[in-house]
Amino acid sequence: MLGAQTPIALWPHGFDLSTLWFLDGMDEHKDPQINIGFSPGTPDVGEPYFYFYAWPVPEGLEKHIPDVFTWNTNWRTPGGTLPYSHFSTESNPTTYVADLLGEVYRVASSMLAQATNA
Image (tube, rainbow, N blue to C red):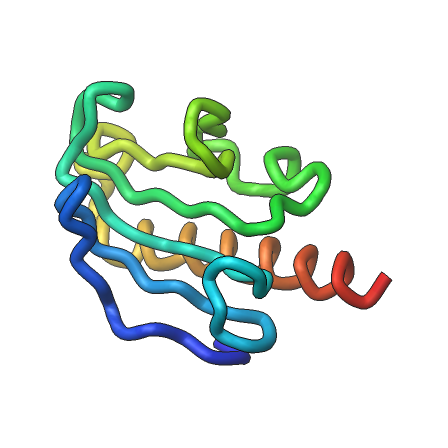
């Protein structure tokens, strides 16, 4: 991953774990970023899930992420979710999830970089 990255944080409001990757700078209120994390579950998803968002949201990001992600527009910043039931039966769920999140990072970071350089 290029740019700065935060240590993994435990967010008390949802008891989720995530890390923020910044394209440039490290101010979560103004610098372009990608958040990738894991939630033990929330009422809107109903089961544990991995999630991500990019901010500011690159136009059309939802069209370029792997199809197994659900695009969630109910959040403050729209992003994708990958519920536990979508990967728990994979023969190698660790590799499966790592590959999917790696693809999300590649797509979102490229789109953020293009948007900031435009």
